[in-house]
Length: 482
Length: 96
Image 1 (cartoon, rainbow over the protein chains, first blue to last red):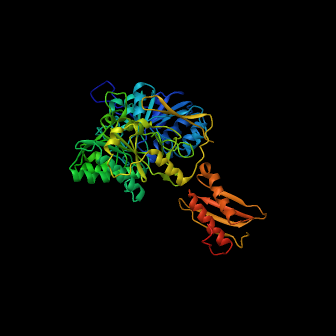
Image 2: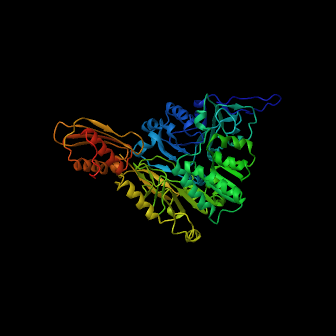
Image 3: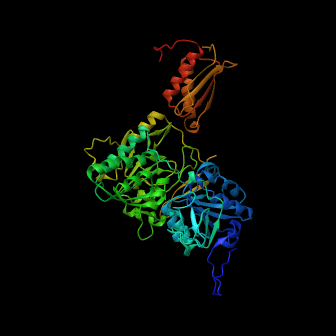
């Protein structure tokens, strides 16, 4: 339990430390009971030790029937399979599923379907009470003993703690887990003392190199570069490319390269962006430090450069997932977004996008901020190669809908650009463009001509996943694949 | 046509297909396919392999194909090459 500190000259007992002896003691003291909901964040990506260590302790202590509400899950979280089989975890809420865990769940491992939410949708669900977190186990790169934590200092830094901030605010009990205990007060306090119940010092919260990898390399793939160049052309010639515009990009090869092409146009036309949003990357930091982007709003630092920039640059702001994209608060940052560039596993001729199930119909990705930003941005651009190996990216019907086609405006491929027929204003805008703008149906036909007719994925009857749209409505379900 | 020796072509690079051809004990042609896209294109890949075997009137061979997402044109080209190696003949460019 707590280590108690007695203050000299004062007979009342005041705890100046919330340090628990170890994970087991913290779990015990948290009041965790069977059937409760526990939460974790995914800022440590595949370098995360926290979720596995906490779950191992919880399983050892004999808990059953817990609901796991993670902001997302990565390949490192394979041990969850065992805890599901043992009945320790019986329900999962997450943004993404990857690796063996994704394969097993797709095959029908769990009785209850997994609920997939977007980042904004998760914040909404927590604030609305759809997810009631009993105990949040939040790994933090550094913390003091009274519960002030951040992701900017420590042994392995992750930058923004934006997803964890929502849990810290709404969970009934908050346990911080760190491997770097700082003297009080540990500032800045991304998660602060008033919301924290306990702090646990462990040997390691994760593998630093995998928490934030240093080298974000620009793609040299000519196909990706061509797509990025085309996407940049669309942005530059759209009505939204003017001084003070805002944008967001994903972390894929093409998306990252778009920032680089945009830079040239911004310099040439003396246009500056008011802000960039979302997952912040090295290319965005470079533009910010060059004075081309005034503010960075960072819910998740995608690489080490972004994580370091938050400490260095006063206008690189940490934002929580609700401020980022919750559709039901009084004003999410996404509402102010002009342009977003998103990737896709599959997009169909109705512009519906799948980012969650692979060509085998099994879980392999994450919902992320995809549908949140698509719904809000003035110009939503999806970038995708026409085919990946023999798998077409442009299809007649996607396997799983995550982002509805009504919120997607432009599809950019290496073989042509398609504008959503709903956007007659954009179609008019690009009427005389030299860009290869063609109907999306033509792109689908071209893809089919190259790869041949593919068979439909054979799903079973049992529902293994529910895809929630950002507002909490169910936009699709995923059925098992044996 | 019968093969004179076992032969192999292709690589395990993405979008390629590695094909080996050996003599079967019977007159039957056997196709053994491994592919990451078997669930989507398995029958199509086997159809292409079979059509090239038919084109060259091959009999009693075992074709082992390790596909890495090759397109039909690649599969057909690799099949032609492996047959020519196996029958120790020059490619007849007139035969399409």
